[in-house]
Image 1: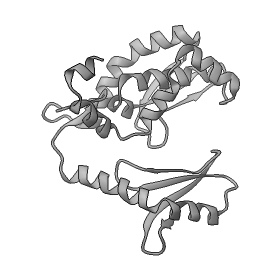
Image 2 (image 1 turned 60 degrees about the vertical axis):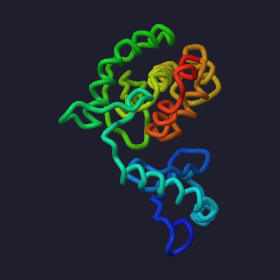
Image 3 (image 1 turned 135 degrees about the vertical axis):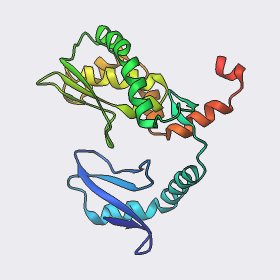
Image 4 (image 1 turned 90 degrees about the vertical axis):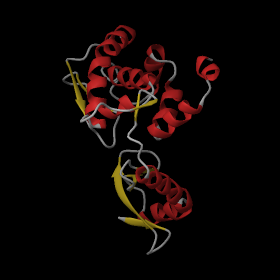
Length: 211
């Protein structure tokens, strides 16, 4: 655990992972997490956090403001909806994803030419999906139901492509682009807060939404 901005700064959980660069994010619960390459010196991670202290405090404040003024609505497929009484957001997302996933699987299996042996829905904190090429099993994060539908299309295509190419090399991205050309857009959406995306969509005029 490090702190951004000195001893009285923002606490940040630090995790060494097989990543190429430092990746700082604020989780839905308001906690901060920093992924660093396996050989990254702790001093370098600390400098990175200190340089991003202002950004980190702003993101955490936004999370807290949303949590302090709930309106009962939750993001679902890029829009804000009110769950039926007694239904939690997790239950809603899981049910919606289970209903939509078979159609997306059929479309993306045809597009990639790959077929998974089994699909699972999971609540994951660090991944949108995962694949075990040896067994053909794929897991999908239920939180994807909070994002625009294209994000689910992307993750399903991404994991299916791993059945043909386990690594993220040039061949993988070439195969993925053939099945899902909008990877950059989907990745950009997934880096944002789903409620913020839904709020922006709600503020657009009918003409803008149609366009």
